[in-house]
Length: 275
Ligand SMILES: [Zn+2]
Image (cartoon, rainbow, N blue to C red):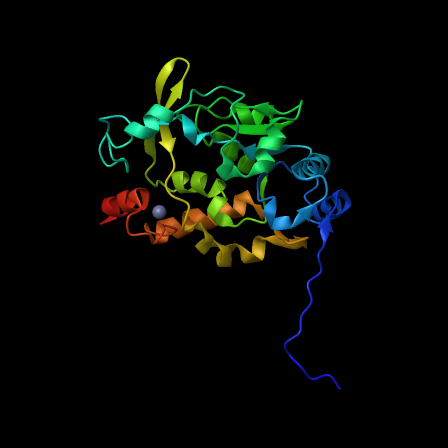
């Protein structure tokens, strides 16, 4: 009789389009508009790469948005408003390497390859915020909800329209919708600057740090739909409940969802306002 406890086996599984379609449909989101955050690597091997994931997303979700943020446009000025979680005058080297925002600029590598692949679809549209643009499919009204004073406006409208956040192999630390709920809860927003063909523009409404966001997971558990596709845990979260939970949490504890890094400028700026 075999009585060992040490063996295990690994199934080297390739994720195919069919697996993605079946899995995403299993979330039962119907025609609900979604914002998708993703990691291609989390799936393991995907036949056809990011194009396959994007095909599945656009087949299953009639209205979808992805973040196509472009941090390489950012400029650090010599002076600016106080308590802004920035070291003025410190960014000379980055300033020299900053690039002008254009609508065709690649999404930052931090977003993963899936948003960049999505953005390049012939029918995809992109908003024109120089740091926090979104790309969308059939999402014109959501993209138009963005302006300089309300860079995350598309997420506010998404919540208003019953939208969900879909997390493909990533956790709440990349769930940008939490930033919008933070703003609704009255949490401080910051000012940043971006290089555009018209010069350096001021971009208010820049959110805080998201490194502490995963602590929202236990409270969101009962509202979250979860399943596995290949190596990726897929989660779908209703934005209306997410906003309620985040706002309640911050009202109860003004330091909620901040990260624990001692040198985090944005989290420390919020702590200094509270204490
Ligand atoms: Zn932080």
